Image (cartoon, rainbow, N blue to C red; front, side, top):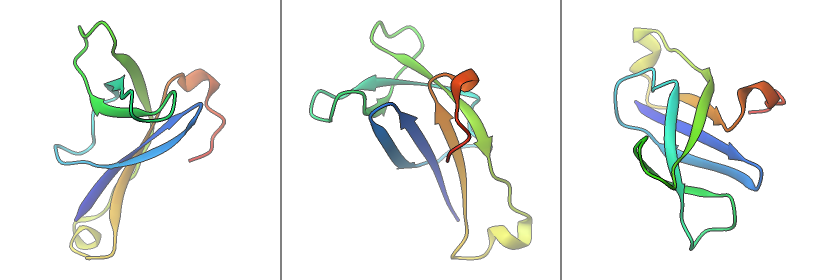
Length: 90
């Protein structure tokens, strides 16, 4: 099965493959990559990284065990900077 997370920022959306326990954490920390457009994230960071910013999980899909064995289905989670200002779009 493939898992992914979608990171939505003011400047765009980035889809990343995810390997780890599901569901993913409620908060993730990211840093800016100077090679990407302003505002796009590139890599995970740790909480005490001075340049890290927090992204909050606002949605997270679940699959049954039977669905999880299907090669064409995937789980996904959406992260946004401010969940209180999230417009509901995925």
